[in-house]
Every structure is written in C-alpha cells, then in structure tokens.
Length: 168
Length: 316
Image (cartoon, rainbow over all chains, first blue to last red; front, side):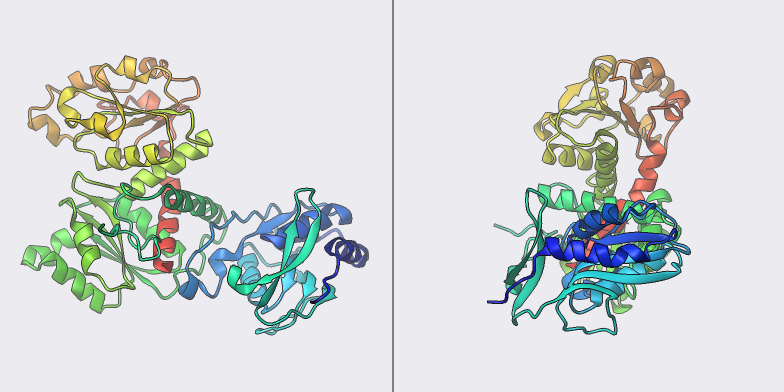
C-alpha cells in the first residue's frame, strides 16, 4: 500500500514556497474540482489582490470525440484581466499533462498572460505531453490501474486518496 | 417497450426531437451545460474548440430567421462548420423526397442536422434513418414540438427565478397552434413547476389540454393573478382568416398583455415571448419594452442552450 502524503501539509508547504514570488501582477486560477479546492485555500494564504479565477476545461478537452460531455461542466469564471498577468495555474494532481494543455488553451481565449506557472499538489509522473510543473507539493508513485484524487471532507479538510480507475 | 428514439442504448441524448419523454436528469444536464456556455458567450473570444471539424447542416423547410440564426451562431461558437439550406427554394420544389435530401447531405459528411419542417414528425422520420454518428435536432415541426425554444424558456425562467418549485407560470394565447407551448408545458411539469396555466379563448386552446397537467382560464385577469412568469404566444395572422377570432382589436382587448393586466401578476413577474411579436395584438409595447420583459435576454440565452444541445448530442 502506497503511503500518501498529507494534503494539508503539502498545501502549507506550497504556500510558503509561493509567498516570496507574489507580485502586483500575480493572479491565480484553479481547475475544477480538486484544483479549485486547493486554489481556494492557497489564494487567501498568499494574500493575492486579484480575485480568484476558477476554470472548467470541459469545452477544451482532447477526448471529447471519444467521451463526449459526460459531466455537467461548471461555469468558468475569470474575474480579472488575464492580459499581462503573472498567472499561477493550480491543479491537484499532475499526470498526463492533457488537462494543463486544455487549461492553457482556454486561458488564452481570455487574453495573453505575461507568464503561467503550474502549481500542483502532487506530481504522479506519466506525462504524455511536454509539460512540467514549477511548484510541486510532492511526487507520488501510483500503482497501475489506480488514480490519485483529492477529496474534501465535510469539515473542509483536504485529503489525498487512491481509488480504482474503473470507478470513475 | 420501444426505446425512446431520442436516447441511445445507454440512455444518453442522441437526438433532440421533443421535450416530451425526456427524463428530468437530461433536461437538467442541458440547462447546466448551457449555464457554462453562457459564460463563453460573455467572453471576448466567444468560441470553444469542441466541434472542430464537425459539420452542422441547418435544414429549414419552413422560413425562420431567429431560430436559424441562433443555431448558426451556436454552431460557429462551437467551431463547427455550418451549412444553411433553405429547402423551400431548393430540391423539395424539384420533387426530391425528404429522406433523399438527407441521404445526399449525409454523403457530404454531415454530423448534425438541425431540422425545421411544417409537418409534425419530420425530424423523427429523419432520426430513424440517419447513420449512428449523425444527430438530429428538431428546430420546430408543425404544431408538434420546438424543443430548443422550450429549453431556452426553461433556462430563462430558472435564470430569473432560480428554481421551479413554487412557481406559477401562465402561457397566454394561441396554444392550439403553438409548438412552443407544448414543449414548455412538458418541460415545466417534468422539472416540477407546481402550477402551469393556459389562458386563451376556447377556439385557441386544444381540446383536453387539461390532460397535460395545466389549469385552463378563459378570463385573462383571473388567469394572471399572482403569476411569477407570463409567457405570451404569437397570434398568427392566418388564424384570423380561419374564423377562429373576430379581429385583432377584439383579441387585444381580451388577451393582449397590457400594463394594467400585468399588474395582477406578482410584482416581480417576468414576461416572455418566443418572437416574432405582434405589438398591439398579443402584447402592448409598454409591456414588451418594459421592466418586466425578458424577451431579448431569451434570444441571447437561446444561443447558449443550442450550444449545449449540440455539444451533448454530438458527444453521445
């Protein structure tokens, strides 16, 4: 059984790592669902001046032809000007890199950011695209056939969990 | 039991032919997806790549400006290629059959057919004959159904009233000839609106309309009392000739929506109309342009709703 790191501790650690890099043009976008939870946590910890953006990349996925629109997409809300911003793109688990590719495409339909840095709670390897994260909470090996997911307890506590890939 | 012709073997939406018979979950899926697309239509770049490389054929056997245009905009915002065919001036007049027309377009690699036809059931016939990867969306068939209009009405109501429980909705006018009314009534009852009323003269209400779960009123003032939503239907001019009504002036006096009649509805009531409006026949200009009117937002929401329908069916 793989021992999973504590999500709450990784979140603190990421905040500490990001704090010195926050400037007047910094802004944050979290990806639904897990990345949005993490971003909702990090955003106040970093004292960002711009409101938090939340994004659902359903309309930019590369597997629409195979899977269709299976989940009801959430409404993307980017309540700041993306043009010229230094964006922190936040997700829970980095795996194939396809979600990040889709997210960058969607972001550019809002404007041209000065830069995008990728912040993830966990990197589980297995990249299928040339994408890497600038800020990583932990690297975790995930057994074949399993997926790593961020969960939010009723209390609001974030935890990492392994589940069977088939269950999704 | 025969399978619902709109759903695939997994119970997912494959064609949109009618609101009647669609489960609540699918109606909500469409409304929720449309909510996300409404966000896209507010951006500077109003386009997503979802239907890149797909072809949408607008097959209009009956004239329409608003519906055809909003379908076209919706398809373009999904990055699909759109081909508009105005069939009234095309093959049909040369004698080609409906299914031959569709087979030819299918040979041109169509993915979605958006169909408007004066005969009730025409989109169902097409849906039975298309290939598995092709999808049919009914854009109005005869007096039968106009599901995307019904859905955009539902979307508009939910947008302003948040949810359907506790709502009283009045549909006023020519229910008999209205495919919009039928679609909306089915949608409202499926989503749990507790009271749907139809208001109109006996000659313009279908016999046995109560069976759809609506309350019938012939007196507009009685019917509008305490309504949250007032949906006005277009009075088609040709009905005057059919001796169903004495005159437009007479109709306006009894069933035209004026500010003083609207005052009987709730203070925050919204007024809807599927368009095109006959000002001074079914609706007074002071109401159509007044603070309760959401007639133009309906048109805008129609784009997001049609984007949702196309992207859901094309993915199933």
